Image 1 (cartoon, rainbow, N blue to C red):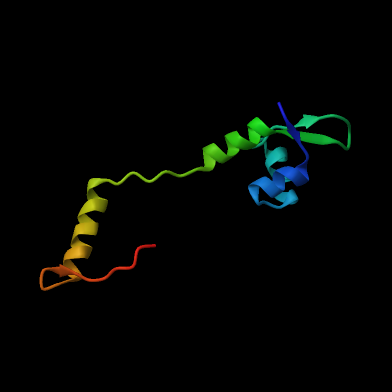
Image 2: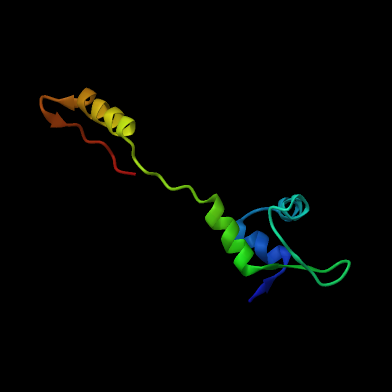
Length: 86
């Protein structure tokens, strides 16, 4: 188990220290209190927070219908336009 400082965790999460302190205060992120002024965050808790906030996209029928309509609208003479891939 690795313990991280608030500064290290804020760099990993790309959040401000203040935001992390707010997460700790509201209970979104547990911490290890070593003394009145020293707290550490478990690396596993940081990874859990990342996995909880990760959004996965799963296409649904409506999304596929909208995509087909879009492609049909922008097709030219049966050939698709050059749509840049992002």
